[in-house]
Length: 142
Image (cartoon, rainbow, N blue to C red; front, side, top):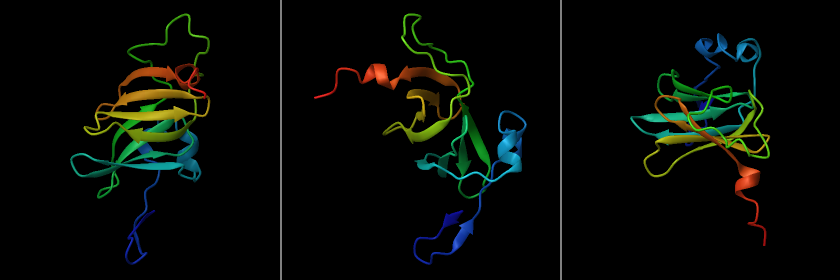
């Protein structure tokens, strides 16, 4: 539900779209899921990236409630992890966080509970690459 900050009244309720239910979100279409993260993306009107602890995040227009793009951890990346990478992501990993690249917002970044970062092209939903956050952050400890 989208709330008005001044009046605390409900402006609009958004649900999992039926178009995505036909793909990998069948369970979301039949049951209600709690939203884990909503990230504002103010490109061509107000839109939100919504993550609900499933393998798909969606870009939703605030005004119409329509889905403009979806981002799935089941997608094949254009640039895969190197063959010598110590860990590989599980197909269909559960997204737990999302944010948008700054300042142009060309990419949506989604993180799985396994610790992999998925970089998607915002407008098309194409998975550009996957990064292992554990490997990328190793050696940063003080």
